[in-house]
Image (cartoon, rainbow, N blue to C red; front, side, top):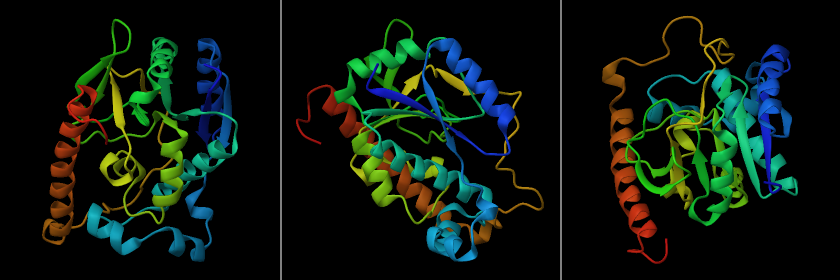
Length: 255
């Protein structure tokens, strides 16, 4: 897998988290590089205004954005820039609170062998995504097309085409990163997930995004634009998923 390299997103103030996941990756024989995460609260006000579409975020997500979310979002986008500046063809992106399983290296090998079948693949998930299998990845795992929401961005693989689209189209921020980057129909990408997942949340590591204080979620009567956005998104996800499955089965020649 010489064409694939691993990057770990890690805040300067969290060296213990880096040591933890670094030891796990070393044990799996996966070379990796630390990527310094963006500390949202340290961004100048002018940069926050430029990089965050606050009105768009509030309309689409139904709550006020946090600087932690903005920092997380920018960390992923800036990592894509570093990846594109590297000689590597594929990037394994990990947040430092994820726990890779022993099956990860084998699944990565299968993904490299089937690299024409995907542009971005989720390796972990918070929601199932209701995947439909389109390709076996060894005996125990499958590559799937998602038909429902599948949030989470703690572990995924991208090729250079996906990274380029993300750099060009993801800013300014209008949604949390894990709600934005898997919309294949928006970016013209083949988006997939591996199931069962091969990276899981490390329960012994606490979140560094954190949102202390009162709830940021708007009252239900202020969330009508959010409900409309989510309905449109899920309808488009289903239509996109059907086209992707047909493509895998040879029913559609060109996406």
